[in-house]
Length: 88
Image (cartoon, rainbow, N blue to C red; front, side):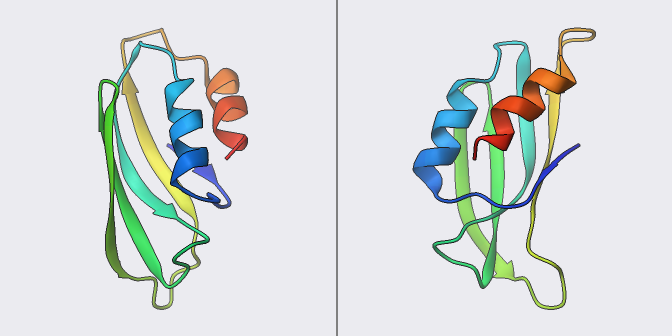
């Protein structure tokens, strides 16, 4: 999985996701958005289509952005992905 500290907003997230290589087929997880810090947001991506929907309150959890990327075997460069996603 990939874990980053926060995501400023959906526009910044969109820019990062658009930069992902086409070998990423699917992704899912939870996102922390500064615009709505009380709620975690459910993230899902298939191909280049993605969605972010409001989920439950964070409660006792530490707000963070964490998701899993699924791609073709041997086609994912982890350091490249971390660089792309750290720009959020």
